[in-house]
Amino acid sequence: MKLKPLLFLAVIWGGLFALVEAGSWMVLKVANARHPSDNPLVTEYLARGHPLFVDNEDLRIQSQEFFYHPFLGYEQARNHVTIRPSPEYTGHIGVDAAGFVHTGDPERNPKRLAEPKGRSYRVVFLGGSTMFGLGSSRNQTTIPAYFEALLHQAWPGVEFLVLNAGVQGYQSTQERVAYELYLDGLEPDLVIALDGTNDAMFPADLAVWKPYFSTTSLVDNARFVSLHKPSVNLASTIQALITFPEPLASLALLRRVISRLPGGPQPRHDQPGIYHPEAAVQLHGNLKSLARQLTSDHRLGLFVLQPYLGHAKPNLTEGERAIVDGYGGRIEVFNRHFSDFAALYHDLDQHFSGSGLLFIDLRTVFSDTPNLIYHSLAHYNDTGNKMLADVMFTRVQADMAADLGTKGLLP
Image (cartoon, rainbow, N blue to C red; front, top):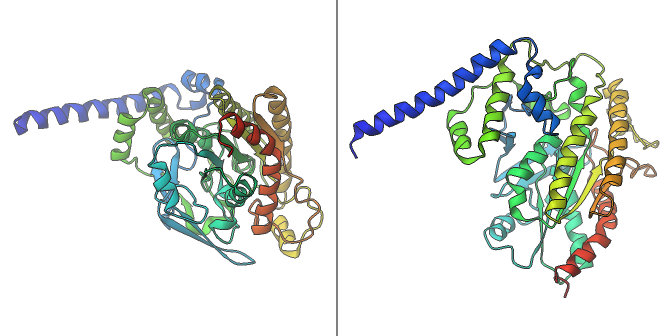
């Protein structure tokens, strides 16, 4: 084939792509310049329990811990070690080549995932920075790592693969979408999701509720995160349009356009925080959508409302008290959001009773602990991670035993 026809074809395709971008931008700009959330496409999408997600796309990461992702906003950098100082130690948390926080062996996950699942039992953990391991001293002391150790103690003859898909700053929307796009295809037998803080904290920074947007400033990691409005990565966007289903690609385009409209959402860090009841509606939609997918695939699920500093730990250390005081009146806003979350976890637990899914509230798990647990609002030290993993395992152990037996995996 001659070069000239190829160039002509490339120009045609480039023109079509530019037309879609420019046309969508102009239509939405004219139709929804004042109230973009009134767009019927947005309303219909939200009604299905799938909020749009600008979440954290406008991050400029100075330390290269994250990379742009067209649908999730960003993802963890692979083969990277995150280093965080804390009052007790300097934590080192490594992400392997497969994109997961490993539990001690960075070579295991890429190797095992390249092989057929076979007779292995896979457990996937979802969450934000707490599940990722901020607060931990090393990979072996994260919540999933402690949970994995309990699995081997209980069933030493079973081949387990524990995948920590926690990502710093992720809210329930990004967790759900990541599961639908990638993690579901790994055929997990059990999914454990730890949520609450990001879904409560980021909306509290919004003067006006925007279901498709959340602020992106990680409160206790502000020194390596700053906000800006980036140019869209053309290569990533084109690849996404080719790779992913058309409806999702269209929504990604719509989301980018809305984020550029005048009068867009502006984070407010100079106020004590604002309560938005819609935050619970958004979390409910994400959890229910994920739960339905798990039940349809006959998989086990454990959904955990996480403990956070400022609730149900009366004996605070001096360091923990300083953290609470630093948040000031925002703690009361978090409490209101978490109160709403606790109610929806109870409702979902009733709704999915008997289906292999559990929704549990662990906000009080540290209530009798006088020792230091928290390094920040919801980052626990190694002791706290171990306590949380123990409770999680206890709650799901019976269902796991039955599942292992049904699948013929017990020796």
